[in-house]
Image (cartoon, rainbow, N blue to C red):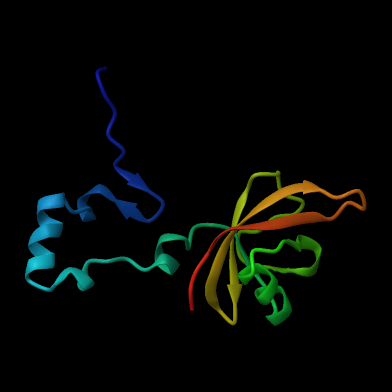
Length: 119
């Protein structure tokens, strides 16, 4: 075997992928917007957590929050291994991608923002 080809990842299959040439052609014809997949779609297979307004402000400023104070969404299990990533949703919209860290001395797991999206 000389190489492997990934034919799918999550809900995305190779048949739906575009080459760089196809992307260029779509960009020139102003049809590229129809081909772009939203971040919500890209990350929908990840575990999700719903955060409130105060937690959203902390995450937006790059601060950590504790997982114990967060409402788990679909696909979320706790305690989760350190290093797992989760979608952080505020009012149903994707706000950030967070990474679970080791537990604190009092046993709470910390979520650190990895990528915060502009809204």
